[in-house]
Image: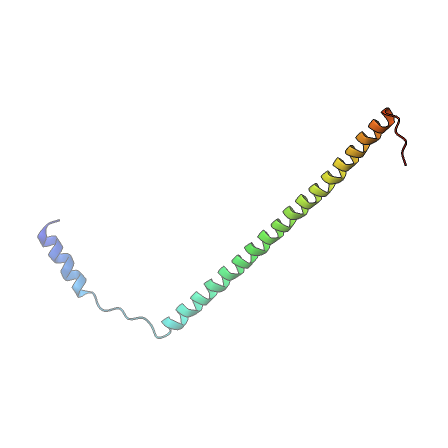
Length: 93
């Protein structure tokens, strides 16, 4: 930029009047901050509740799967032992 252009811009900047906030600016700004905090707090609470629900469902699925797997493995093992005992002619007590 040319020096003349820069000087002109500086003079225009210096000529700008001082801007002062209105009387209720602090109150309005505080209300907006409080509203945004409450909205964010509600969103975080909903997100945490959703994560807790998903975690509970996953734990229930894992517990149910391990429970049924254990009974299936015990049943299959009992069947195997029963077949072996019948083949070896071992009497059941």
